[in-house]
Image (cartoon, rainbow, N blue to C red):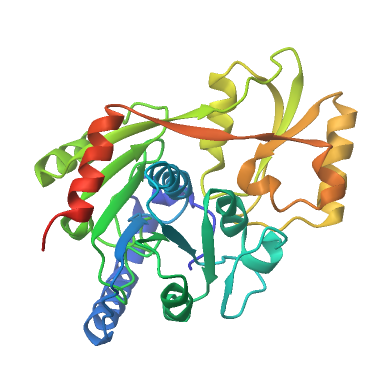
Amino acid sequence: MINLKYPNFWSKKNWLSSIMVFFSYIYIFLGFVRTQTTRKVKLPQKIICVGNITLGGSGKTQIVAWLAQKLAKQKISFVIVTKAYKSDLTKVKLVKKTDTAKEVGDESVMLRKYGSVIAAKKINYALPLIHQINPEIVILDDGMQNPVLQKNLQILAIDLLKGVGNNRIFPAGPLRESLKSGFAKSDLIFMVGNNQSKDINLINSITLSQKPYFTATIKLKENLDKNMEYIAFAGIGNPEKFYSLLLENNLKVKQYVSFGDHHNYSDDEIQKLLDLANLNNASLITTEKDYVKLANKYKKLVICAKVDLSFENEQKCIDLVYEKLFQEN
């Protein structure tokens, strides 16, 4: 995983971005070599991949949670495979309820309540456990650019707030691959966020791709006290999305504190946040992905803002998922 903060020059084409274009070609070439030289594995299970074509948060984990809930409702057996980002895991582990984010990654802990989760540093490491569990469906949280597994359904997640930035490939921009290749391998496109996309070129590209696309808004699961004042903190790919959600729900946020994606919090950092909240007579609030990384002694002192996805034309979306997943080859 490439783990860095979203630099300002990724938002628009400028001289710094243009200088980086040469390195983008190297990145593209390495990706091509990997695709051509990787031995592909076809599993007996149906494989759903929820991925993105940009670096940073795009709502993948929320989509995986939504899918897991829909499959569970239909009594379809599944297992979720995560990459255990920023964890101490070296190979693979079937996630237990007692596992911590430091051991298996924040996404693994967060998704465990929806069903079985395999945390694996590489997809190959997960194969024996998938064989042992033998579910009907395997859901990959990320992996659209990983050529190891043949996939039956690929869902592309796009963040409505940031879109695709300057439409250039890493490191000149936030793209992992070109829009054309990303759309070509996708079966469904989910645009996640509560903002109207201002990127007309992106919308036109999606329309021209002729791939079905749906908009999913992010909703708070619980009503939070609007009379209270908050200090919001987050260590996710796109913290602005979380902060915008709090403002959309008319919460009084006095200050925002951002950390790097998949940040693991030290006692000293949490204590400084608690001191800041006390100084401002405010309460700390964070995302579910950050909350699961807090030591138990701090969890009663921090509010967890749990969210759900709300799809336009949800039934049509679900029907298409099942249609593409179970269609005859």
